[in-house]
Image (cartoon, rainbow, N blue to C red; front, side, top):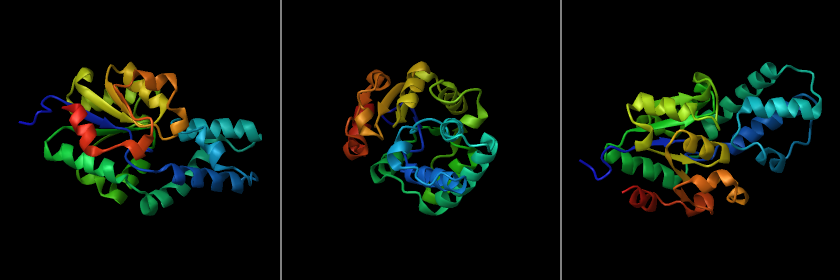
Length: 225
């Protein structure tokens, strides 16, 4: 029996386990370029970190006055994204180490993500993390995405864990808010470190202001124990 008895860990995927934002940016950029918007920048994209692709595209459609329905823009962006996800997703080395530490201790783990089931599968398979992360919840499967707690509560349900026994790892403010609303402790690792002062992060049990550069598998493990 490990000294983590009774604990379950739920990981956000994008920006937490893997650095997929460059792929989301590239997929969105390609779609916008195909619809006559040639100059979508990374700094514009950063404002949408942590909200769903669908919400992002709805806002961009409005901003640029695009005539194409959001569903079509979403389908195009997802197909660009899946092509990138299968071949070009990078798992953070310390996160991979952390997952392996927890797996060795038999700690129940899940992934709860705003991405589509296809995108989650492409990433976990492409990085080999699917070997240990088999419980997966997409926001597509629940009533509301983050900052609502639905994905985290569903992940806990599938793990057979009480929310109070779950710890969430998150990189975005809406995710930290969702973990808090779910009644779960949170380790927050801001993807956009300039957002570390966001009120949502103040509720985290552990806030690593420097983001992934500050995250260490061993330190996170020690914090849990």
